[in-house]
Length: 407
Image 1 (cartoon, one colour):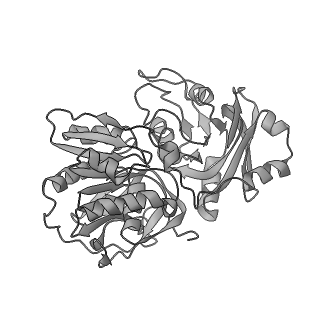
Image 2 (tube, rainbow, N blue to C red):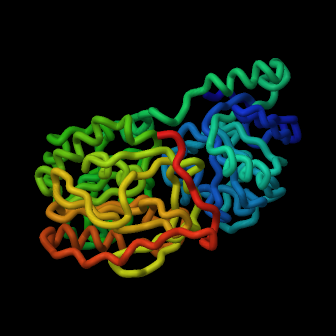
């Protein structure tokens, strides 16, 4: 929910959490009112890619890095056609952008796109609060929205805002029409990519490997998928609660029944889990940033990865689980907290990871997963390598231990 006007520099603004905790600051971007789920992102760079990620739909993003906006806004790094965050919270916005690619200031772009933000907030204290209490609804108010209502009235608007649990949002961010990203160089394969909130760099990474990528709407049917004669099917990242995505899960089950090679990331990983009969749950505060360590149990390699998710798959880290499509194993594990970060299936050519190998923004450690998908398409029956034992998180691991929220 958002109502906006052009920002007035230095005008007062208020951030109000649903548990009543408040932070004052100054309007940043558009003024007005917005309500969403408060989450924090630990990335120190890549804010343009972050806030144009459709996975942040209906979320108010708190940046933990203190200086935001230093490199301004350019015309190349958007990961979608618009900013998707419901609101933006920073401590110290850059006084002036300085980068050879910058075309305008971040604050001006927020204002142009009607994104209500707030600056001057103690984002360290706010992040600690969310880590202790969990992600929750929040409102950002400035201008007439702030001056025209009492604190109690504003708090009531926050508490009546929509919750993320149970939200089916992929259809709100997906493409309306199928489009094609051509292969770069010689065409080697055709991929049907279901857009649940896809980022622009994902089909580019597939295209670099010779894939002609047909990007389909979230509500695509199995007939739509088969119509492009795909060698493989891909499910993207996206917003919302995977337990509400009944159509997408049914579509994925139809793909698995036909043994078409499948690769899913982030939301696609959660949907694979549900298609295989596993449950999902809401994390207490989620993983968002570009510095999350993950173990690939098939190689023993530790990757630093980009994350943006508030839900996770509920599966045992050791052993395998029977499913209608074969035995399921946890292939990747988060080293901070032991959260399931990847799945693979024996007997059906399918695997997924919970993070973002397209690295926009983020490190490129996980880029090899696109090669793994191409290899799977080339030889769907190739034997899977054995998995290492899953690590057990301890108090000495980097960062704090994430816990499950309400199921």
